[in-house]
Image (cartoon, rainbow, N blue to C red; front, side, top):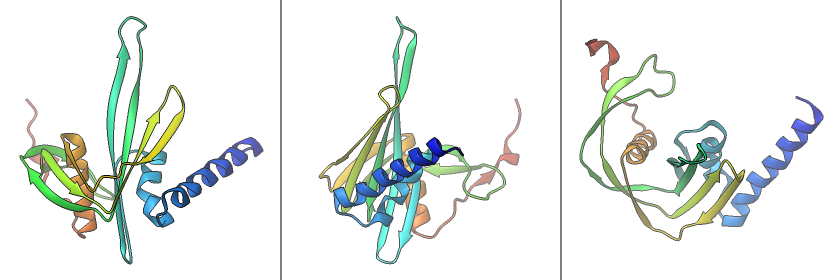
Length: 173
């Protein structure tokens, strides 16, 4: 890593640290959001007296005339989340952690989640911006892949690992 890269990394880390102060939350609570930013995907975190999850919602915006687009990411951070409602069933393949292969699991299609705080970071790749805001929401509802991801992370907070059928049960057609 050269000096410019190190400097950029330090400046970015300082901006990350400032978010906790800006929103008046413990720095630990930001871990899932920061991991979603750096590594992608949904994350969960638990420490004494604190739980948090992040869930990513992606929307691809494409201009058919100019033949260019981008994927806007909304990363939702839920501090002390509580799963209030699950609805429907979605079968999907998931892999988590050190599991050797994906498993066929059942997840809800729709979830309603309550939280002490909800913060949204909107990542715009063309503008190269990350806009963070407190949503002042006590409850939110999600469907589809985002709902599945939330359910998965809530499973982690409950101390459970994913369970399902192995990929070997599938047949090639």
